[in-house]
Image (cartoon, rainbow, N blue to C red; front, side, top):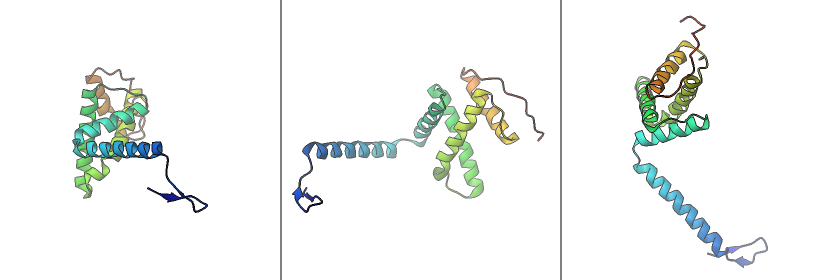
Length: 143
């Protein structure tokens, strides 16, 4: 493949650069193909585990799967009620779920009663899988 530099001279890219570019494209293609055939449950669990790892929370795979399934279920219910496609919204719900799981794990107070109920539910799942949960503060605002 020939190209021209700024002076109009025809040059060839370095052989190593072409090979490195081809390897990068190949890995990208492999990742895309793997993600296309990966079931939603598996990719949701991985996404949630990555979101929680960013918040320095490590969960066993069974716990992460149960939490991801719960988030997907909630996402489907909300999408059905709003008339949207749940697959387009699932990453948003997984990110928000990870935020609520971090609140539940650290025992921080939630912003409102709905978040408090979500955090309590996530804390119960984590406790059932043997994850140490900080004491939840009592709700300060009435329902």
